[in-house]
Length: 285
Image (cartoon, rainbow, N blue to C red):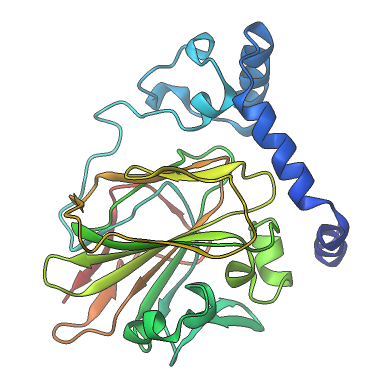
């Protein structure tokens, strides 16, 4: 199937209904049937269960429990770096934010304002800053970790479409990451600068969850929802888990323009390259 046809079909699919159904299946406690589904998935996508804290497929009561499995403590050592890669996956794009425009793929970009839910004041600190877009494939570890230490300021659930977020769709759907449903989490780093982690939903992504809130969606009321945490002292250390996808998707990270040393991404990074949680993502040189 060529790229144009694959993208065109996504406009026709009942994406919301498919996602709701997938969410029900993923929560089903089906005993031997659940184990059979998990075993098929491991074989189909080449999931490396040797890294899991529990490699016994029969011990997972639901597909979601398997999909959000923990890793063995030694599986992802943390590099010594200013910013760590927060997920296992592949690099979609990364680099400078041009004004307020974020590069998606050849011929496509979108604005920081659109990504964070339409609030210009929330987007302004990141104009001229830096971004990284990381894609999690079905075989990947699906917990999301902190690139650096931070204090939680706010969380916004932005309703939207549920297109696939694979590389083919990123090349074919304009403004993909600012069109899909997403959870926008804003933090303050130890030096007082803000940074944002955007968890982007997709077709078949049953829900997204954070460690401080639990499952954010469902419900899906169709309106923007916001939680203000500035009056609380929710702090996460570098490398701590901050959330997870119940079925996989994409994380977009936003960093403001530097006031001192410039941000330099890992020189080994290239679009399409594989990354692992805990690897060095960037330094302030």
